[in-house]
Amino acid sequence: MLRTQRLCLRHRLHRLPQFPDRCAFQAAPAGGTDAFVAKISPSGNPLAYSTYLGGSAWDAGRGIAVDAAGRACVAGETASANFPLANPVQGTRGGEEADAFVTCLNPAGSGLTYSTYLGGRDADAASSIALDSAGSAYITGLTAPGISRPLLPSRADVPAMSMLS
Image (tube, rainbow, N blue to C red; front, side, top):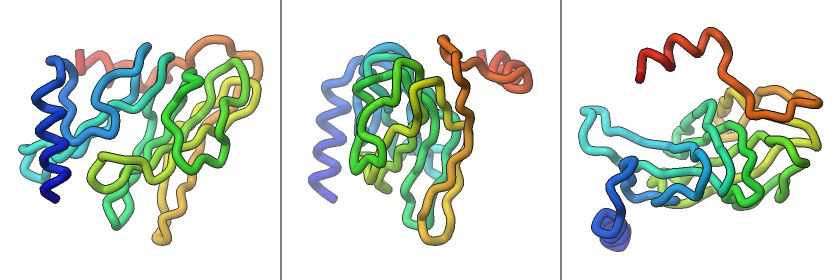
């Protein structure tokens, strides 16, 4: 535990004032637009961890589920050829378009249990994730042949997003 605390302190001392990172697997954006994962304590303070998640192009988290051990598993989409991977099912992007990704962080948010692409040659995106009692992940999303741009939120998502700005 002491080693983790020292690493967290070092990150806090050397980071630029940006999105809050604490005990992060990825302490800085990698380029483009990155997804993020944050864990906030039940009282709202302190921030248990917060990390960027992405590569050099655009990346977006679309769904999250947490297992009984505290692993946060995120599903989304990425256009990054260098998205962070660990124990991947699919170790390279499937094509020129975006691919879905599934990433599980360790309970401290400081490392990856696994992270993989899921996709073929056309655009693919994961929109939801669920975990069963054994920790297996179930992902749903879409595959859209011929789409050549990032997928946009549905109309139902727009009002909620505009209220945040």
